[in-house]
Image (cartoon, rainbow over all chains, first blue to last red; front, top):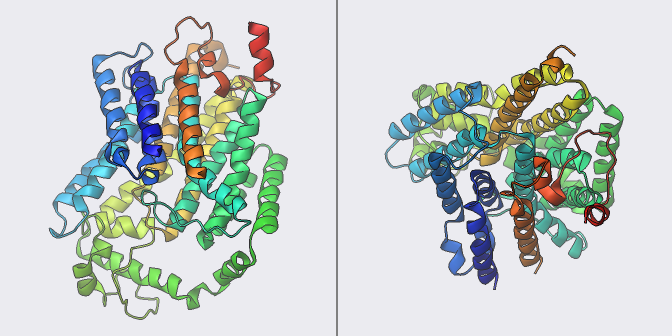
Length: 434
Length: 57
């Protein structure tokens, strides 16, 4: 039944995407994030929706079908992404030859980067940027809505376990927290009551879905994002109110076993789950010490053969006492994952790419301030995009999530936001001197 | 059941979002977003979509 519905949807969406590059691009992004295959069990499961929309977009870009398309603007994020992609190819090429998912993960990163590189050409106006934001939120919060509603339906008994595309409950929680600041922005700027109500409801249900994941990392990430929003927001009262609301929600709806699990954060060093992560970090850093430039290759840290070779090596974390690992667990940290997979050079490029949006944010703020009232939206938007990045950089510290597409999309969205604001500022010379 | 209903909604919202994407008769491109339109100014009042549709009709 679902497959027939999806077939019907594709019969509408594919012709829609042929209308213009912008529509096709939004569908490309949306279909990648919603990962509809995870919810289908019949013949539509094998239909490559994302590739279909990607091919249509690229074809329309090459044919120059978009009247609002601008010449490709030079920007730092594009340079960093190209350098990072080149490094990924080199790392995959020089990797241990038996790594099972080496080229698969490399090509996933390259596909994400390709999506991001097209963005400055297509997302050229505020209305397009807003539409992309809506499409991203629909794609991501869809997963949160499912688990949030199941949590309500089960009276708090449902446990979110994640989906194949996103990973386990911890990955799911991080992705959902990344979507929350975007929902706040959309809520603040919705023109119509019905849309505002919908964003508010999705925000509330997403909070419940995060509780349903039972992720301890999610609590730390939520605290970090809350602190970021309160510290840097121009409207501190609103931020404090929202943070209090989320805390009240958690206290009111979290089941007793959730509180018990969260209390174990204080004894992390005695926790086998946490120590298992430190063992994996040691192994990843040991691989990087042996291959400092290009690392061991994608997912080298969790390869069984490399596990035997590097299990007793201390890497960069010799100062932490840990027992020997029992199995080739995932690296459980975006930083150590990149370090082991792509080496020190890869980590430097990754860090530059992931922290660059914070520099762009400062530039957007400066430019938007000069624009006066008409630039306030850009200031709010860059704060929320940055909050989303904080969620990734903090939440990802204990997760293998370095190749997720959402953070890369956020990085390029920050750059595109800057380009739009700059264009608006340049098109109105009086603003520059306001 | 929940999954199927939400999938239908997600697809429906995307169709709504893209429905007007190629219209060229609109004076303001922001109107292309329809229900998902945004406030130009943060201080602008939130309005009812239905009432505005009636007024425009």
